[in-house]
Amino acid sequence: MTGMVRELTGGTRIKYHANGADNPPIEIDFTPPYRRIDMMQELKSIAGLDIPSDLSSDEANKYLAATCEKYGIKCSPPQTTARLLDKITGHFLEATCVNPTFIINHPEIMSPLAKWHRTQPGLTERFELFINKHEVCNAYTELNDPLVQRHRFEEQLRSRQSGDDEAMALDEAFCTALEYGLPPTGGWGMGIDRIAMLLTDSQNIKEVLLFPTMKPQLPG
Image: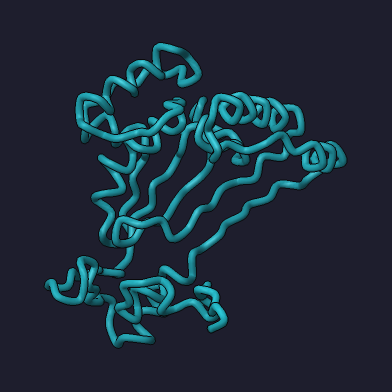
């Protein structure tokens, strides 16, 4: 990415009007190495949060809900542990990610398709890249154990039944496919449109979409 920015702009720093064209631009520095944030460790060191290690417990949910209330962090119902933790991470960590920053080692409860961390129980081998406080890339080692994946889907289903529309549904076809076997695999997805917005100093994503959604033209 640094090479692309240098090729297109002649350097590794760009100006971006993050707060609108009428306000002064911010500077985003793409000079490597990019900062890395270990999610749970950083929440403890920056915010002083002592989150219970068992994130599936009622104790953890109550602690996170109390943290949101204490700091005025809004989390609409249902206040599942995953949703609460996501809002807290956005408030304390993502808000600091102006220059390219990796947030790594997400908890399993937030990453239903990611494989468990090989050395840190309860976490996954996952990272997200943030620029200008927005996620532009999500990547992880793929979970290839069908039994664990089914259990993760069942947890997601319970969250979905409690009203969390963002939780995943139980995918029987995917579980069956895993039973046939999936070799060690990694996957990632990048929001190319968001990168294009930064490099062209565009404030609206419609400005960089090849085929943006348009309001239908009514007859007459």
